[in-house]
Image (tube, rainbow over all chains, first blue to last red; front, side, top):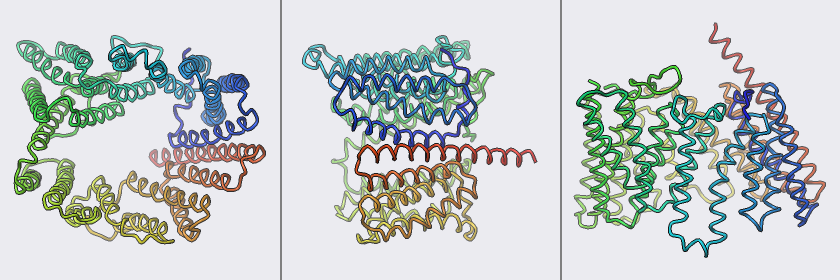
Length: 322
Length: 300
C-alpha cells in the first residue's frame, strides 16, 4: 500500500491550484454531458461511476517524472471527481449507504493508485467522509436517535479524538507512530487538524467531560516533557502548574482540543497545523463569549484566572531555564 | 529582548528538543497568558458596559492607546516588535472611534467611520513602514472610499482604477518617497492577484450579462500589467493566476454561447481539457526554467 514514488511532491503548488480548478471544470462538463444522455437511469450512473473510478486508478498506476505526473493528474483528478459525482447521483435517495460506499471506494482507490497527488486528495476525501456518514445516518433516523442524549456530541467527540490520535500517529519517534502514513504525513496532519477543529464545534459547550479528556491528554504530554527536561524539586512544582494550566483549558472543548493540537504541532514543527489550531483556539474564546449557559462575569473571572496561571507557568519556565 | 521563535532547534528526526521547547513554551505561555488575561478583562468590561459612564468607556480606549504608545516608545524592543505595537495602536484608534460613535450615537455612515480612522493613523502607517499594516490600511481605505464611487456604467472601471492606483503607488512610490521601503513580493503578489481577479470578474460579468462592455477597456491594461509583472519578477503564482483567469473567461464565453446540448458540452470538454493541459505544460516549463535560472544565479 505504500508509495515511494512521490515525484509530484515537487510540483509547484500554484500548478496544483490550476489543475484543481481546471479539473473541476472538466468534471462538471463531463457530468453534465452524461446527465444529458443518461437522464434518470440510476443503474447507468452506478456503472459509469465504477468505470470512471477504474479508469482513474488505472491512470494513477504509472510511475513517471514531474511533467508526466501533471498529465496523469489532469486525467486522474477529473475522473475521480466524475466517479464520485456519479456515485452521489445514483444513491441520492440512500445517502448514508452512498457515503459508506464512497468511503470504501476512496480507500480502495487510495490503496490501488500510485500517483502521489491523487492519493493526497483521496486521503483528504476519505477523512471528510467519516464524519459525514454519521451526520447523514443520525439525520436520516433523527426521530429514533434523538432519544439517545448527546449522540451527535459523542460521535463528533469520538471522531475528533480519533483524528487527534491519527495526527499523533504521524509523529516520528512518537509512541504511536504508524509507518503507513510516512509518505503522507503532512496531508494527514493537515486534514485531521482541520476536520477535528471543525468537528469540535458540534460538541455541546457544556460537555466538560469531553474537554476534560483532551485536557488530560495535554497534561500527560506535559508530564512527559517535564520528566524529560526538568529534575529535582522543580519537577513537582512543574507538575502542579501543568495540571492547573491544562485543567483551565478543560472548561471548554473548543479550547482543550486546539491546546493539545498546538503542543503536538510544535513537537514536529508543523507550523501550518500550529496556525490552524491557534486560529481554532481564538475561535473557541469567541464562542465562549457567546455561550449563554454562563454569566459573562463568570467567564471573565475564569479567563483571567487561566491567564494568570499561564503567566505563572511562563515565570516558572523562565526560572527553570535561567 | 529576543522575540524570535521562528527558528527553534531540533534533533535529527525533526522533533523539537529541549532548547526548542524552552523557546516555544516561553512564547506560548506568555502569549496565551496575556491573551486570556486580556480576553478576561474585555469580558469584564463587556459585562459592566451599560453601567459605565461614557467618559470611562472612551477613557479606557484612550488609556490603552496611550499605554501602548508609551510602551512602544520607551521599552527597548526589536524593530519587528515595535512595528507590531504600532499595528496594535492603529487598531485601538478604530476601537476608540467605534466607542465614540456608540456613546454619542453619531449615526454617521460607515464609510465616515473608516475614513476618520484612516486619517488618524495615516502618519503612523507611513512611519512604521510595515507591510502587514499597509495591507490593513488599504482594507480600511477601501471600506471608506469604495462606497463613495458613483453607481454608473463606469463603476467597475473605477474599482479597477482604484486597485491600479494602489499598485502604482507601491511599485513606484518606494523609489521616490523617503522612508518607504520596497514592498515585499508577497505584498505586490497580493495586490496584483486582487486586481487581476477583479479584472477577470469584470470580463466574466460583461460576457455573461452583456452589460457594461465599456469596462473591458480597463481589463486589457490590467492583464498586460499582470503579465509584465509576473514575467519580470518570475512570479510563478501570478503566472498561474493568468491561466486560471483565461480558463474562467473561456468558460464564461462557453456559458454565454452554448445551448447546453450534447455537441456544445462535448466541444467545451475537449477545449477545456486541451487548454488545461497546455496551461499545465506552460507552467511546469516556466517553473523549471525560472528555478534553473535561480539556481545558476545563486551558484554564480
